[in-house]
Image: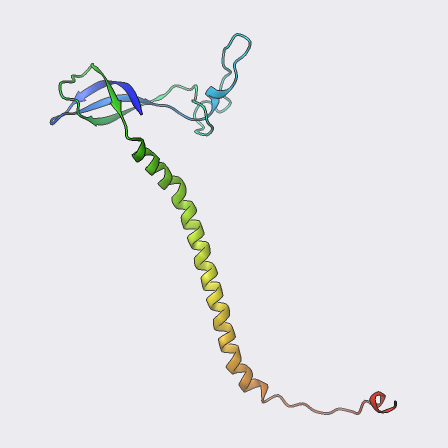
Length: 149
């Protein structure tokens, strides 16, 4: 992504500090305008951070360090470029890592639950052999209905 920015400060070895604006993505910029083409006031106040358009709120100015600015002095305007691969990698980390950890926790709990079930069955078989043979049954009466036919 390329952006035109202002140089604020120069460092040694070709590094400079620049001011750039960070656009919000609340979607308010995607709202249709009125009959005169004037877009409506964003419902979020401009800082909600959700949606697909560009926010109409004042952009946040941030300062970043850039390399390769040999000869650029404070007050100059330069074009900088950021690597989309790094930005997308960080976005994937921020959004996909919690999801992956959720499923990992689910799998671990299912595994532990399955192991507990198997362990419970493994303990019940010897207990059943010991206790099952010690059960004593007593005859309490004769069922005449079986013999009367």
